[in-house]
Image (cartoon, rainbow, N blue to C red):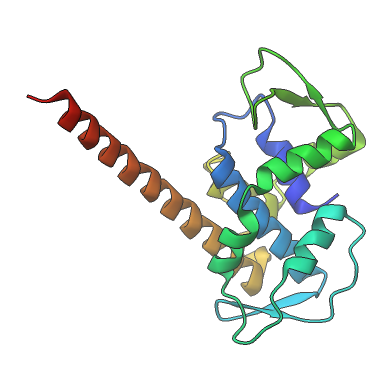
Length: 200
């Protein structure tokens, strides 16, 4: 399993205090993939840009897609651009992959939904592994969860994230805040438009 899958599973926990929007989660999943690629030494971070190294073929299907999506052209891609590009509909891709692997089951009437059909996690080793990382307050998982509002706390040892991972986590926080600003602006514009049509 990967950090991104563990994050997706954590976001689906029915005990979570709040549900997570698909856009927010997609950005965090892209960040989680990038962090796993950093830890595999497939990429590095130079300032705010992603420097691609020798990318081995990951065993995980979605991580292989992430590695294949890396830009090898100079100037190197900015982390923010990667989050938005790779993050497009990424939560739906993880849901589909977990359903295909039998990790998710359809469940009507549940509170959480990440698509047209409501689903819940099956009790599998992957779910137990994600739960164990969460209970241990694993710094990377907690930091990414915090970025999307699953957990208001910060990792107990944020210094243990390392410089490159810290830069990615900060990028996820910034992208999620930018997405929220876009939502608020659209809401205000829609309300103003509705008022124009409603008239005095």
